[in-house]
Image (cartoon, rainbow, N blue to C red; front, top):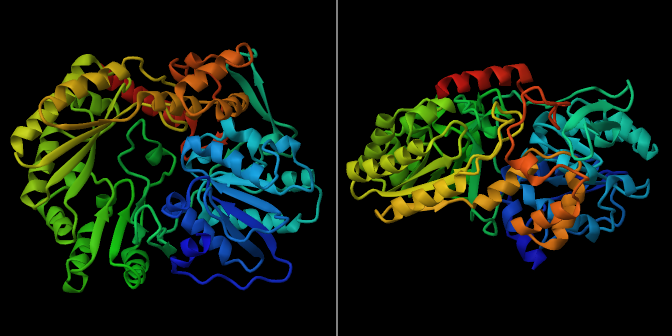
Length: 537
């Protein structure tokens, strides 16, 4: 089975011929191959590694693997989903590597990790990694590996201290965390000595040639699709949005130097094209890109576009999607209440949402999916009623257009203005209200699990004390009940679930990730928070 999986790949890069003393490295994705190979970030990093002659790279997934070295020096993980930490521990055990960094010796590989989960808040997972890479791989990865080459033969502690000097490289064991009490909040996070940077700055790639698929395969979750990153970050800066705040500044791929050459490469191996980005249609030359794709030589291309800015949905966009085999479009509205949209800095009116639906239908699209959210700070029951009213207004305005509302619970994320807020306990009932109201009126309502949102909030606001809890939960099973059981067992050794998930934290309380600097300083995040709170009134 393994051979058939990897032989189905069509590679768009050429791996390097490795030198005799190449570093044996395992690059793992803690999920199945079909999921991992669909991750553009994993694809791109793997290609970067495979093109270095000083590395001998093997891939590892939960279900398949390439031929692995007997004694790897480095094991890397790309972590995209919080609960995949379970598979990280499973894969380490499968390679006979201790799951805790403190238990590893010189005979064990250095375990490093990256990806959006670890860049946002690595602290709950800090005990499992020797090294964490904060930021964009385009600049960070090579510097990390070059630094490792210089200390390759040194003892483990010397290696870690040297790697900690590389911008964006975080070595958790070199920082001491103190707490106000065993079950109290974080009091401070300090480096072990003056040679270690007091803060680790996330590294940001600022080039205008963004990512594109390095492999296309029928075995991917998105079968035979070539993905190209059109924009990175988002200029709207919704106050809750990790995808915007953590990846600032907003960058767009150069049309002539990046996008079009990449698309031409991809279409040589597949007719399926995916345009990725948090706000694809806000590329400054997006109209020009549509004109290119509407040329006759691209008539057979099947086109998919990630979520688009609502007020950019016009009939031309809809017609282009229909022409290229897409029947649906997705927009994020967050709430039917204009007041709530002002709170989160969503620059969008209800009339613009209706116009997007009208344009979508006029252009020939059959369906529109809207993303909403409950439990946004400052939200009232009346605001939720306005979300239901918005969907009913759209149903009346665009009869025949199939409408779906996907709705999640607000979850606070590190490095955003809303990072100190807790999850609203009313969210679950508000999801049930929307479900009852909308489904009875023939509107497809798809709520995200409230229990999963609670777990997500726990991990997104967690500190190092969660390592014990995560290990316990791994053995108890993947359910909210398992987390509650683990909290009960560890009572007195860490704060309760309520502290991590539901409590609003004081803005002057030290945060578990205060020693890790995102794109914006904390003072700017507090300014944006104050602007949001003014909008509540």
